[in-house]
Length: 544
Image (cartoon, rainbow, N blue to C red; front, side, top):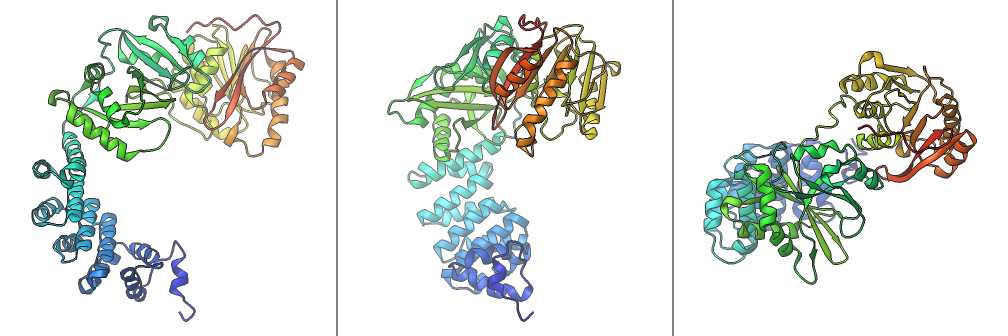
């Protein structure tokens, strides 16, 4: 191909080299420089073939190139495996070049080939270079088992033991601990009256506080680290907290901490190894307690996490051992920082039993906790004829069915493809076939069967809307149609992206506003509004 330019082809992320291109690419990797990374990526697209070619080239290459080629072999091995590549990496652990030995150790830690633990343990015995020893130790942490843990525990003081060795031992320990099963027992009752924090979508905290059972003595808190939340007291079973359908998650708070100039990792380690935390962890957990650190403000802070894990491992007695394991964790340690204060919540990772009716989904469907909020505000009447004119997956109707008695559930949508999904979910929620009516129709003109006493809906918002300019007039027309269809004294509860405009249209259509609240919808804010046809006498009585 006379007009083919390999350097130009490298810029194409989909370029796969030909056999005749491989020698040039290997030379560019060996040389380093601007073309090396692009050449390496191209060779990796060849799978094991690219790694094998790099291994052959590296054996004859000068020391200055072998480290770069060894790294390429390691990346190929981690992607596609290959015993011949593993043997090459084992050989490079004995290479005369220090950088090559370090690259081989790092590659073995990522590729995890059979025999890597034994090869790395042998290298650790022979290696004198501190930088290579550190790479070998770190790799042992990733691939090692009981033999590696024993060797790591015998490391002498110095860099091996203080940083790389400590991290490696933690990794090996958590890997070995996975052989012992563990689980949170949702049926376990609180050891005493235990403070618990319930969290929800921003804006729903007040509604959540009104939904939570009075037995839990809920209260709305708006100050301090962690922002608005509902504080309550758990006195019974752990899974009783799932009775709150607007709740997103819950956690057990530890005493708030003034950070001052104290080192964060030590503060966290002290807090989660105190008796109060141990009681919570071990009371609800069967088997080893595995936890992960979650920074609620975002970010990973990996170095701080490792310092916390090391400090916790030192503080906890064997019978109360806490294992930092982000992959197989049973608990999340949630950290909230604000104005020099730290709030820690211990959140068990449990399977949520509330929304198992969701057998199918459609793009843009409501989150069940949002649907539950609409239902909570709308209230429950046994004679309710409920209409969702933008039914989607039927989540609002499912939540209304679960909340209490009704006569009929009506769902409509312009797209007929969503109706089977809504039907499947409603049947899964326990609704009788005779109480379901689903039909294709335009919410701005449709006359639903019966006379709805409750309209609950989450209309197209945010990413569900292709042209925002068309949305406001369409929602105006929907409001006018809904006002005509709604029974006297009926309620309409929905989310509006144009709340002021909605209020004007509602008044013009004979609907009175009696509830309004801005709510985080997941990346954007909309206003929940509740209207009644006729004089406003407050919300319908809640029977949930």
